Image 1 (cartoon, rainbow, N blue to C red):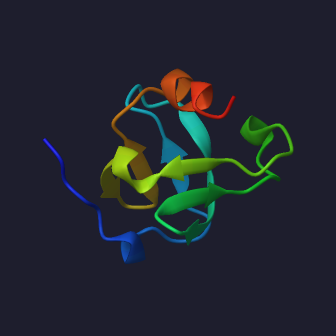
Image 2: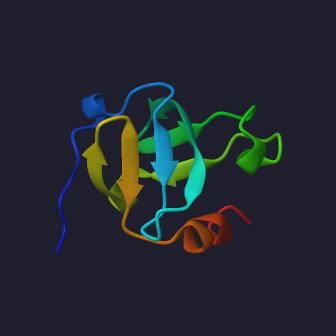
Length: 78
């Protein structure tokens, strides 16, 4: 199943969480179909990382919930 999330619903400073509920990062901004994560978040290791909008499962309150676990998402950063 594929559902595209409206990128305008992804806001700066929202928490990004894996399907397992674990913290992945914090939204810096949406850039070219991807969520750019802040480099200041401890989970980022001081580097900007990107998460494809296709991995977004839902947006609830101030959280962006992904369809993959935090670990699976981190593997895409390597």
